[in-house]
Image 1 (cartoon, rainbow, N blue to C red):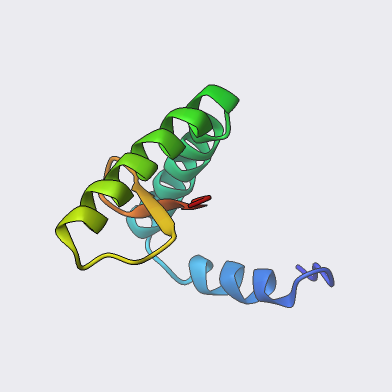
Image 2: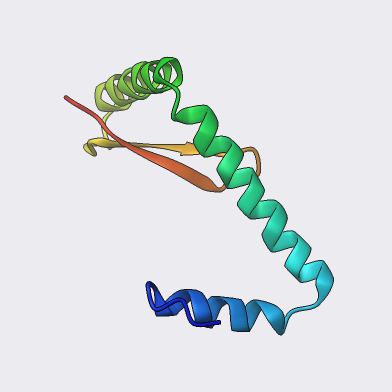
Length: 89
């Protein structure tokens, strides 16, 4: 396969083809999970709720000290980072 758009895709596919079918299934499951989370958190009402939670968490951390970042992170069901939001503070 030659995508010409992104040569890394060719490399990733070649590497994936060397994996066992179980390992390939794990990758497919993870990609599907990320697609589902992206669809969920891209909804306007979800973005609003996440920003409100992130702002509250930022305020609480700032009060306790030790947190000066302006980004909030959302973990998916497996605990992996799946979204990053820039906070307007």
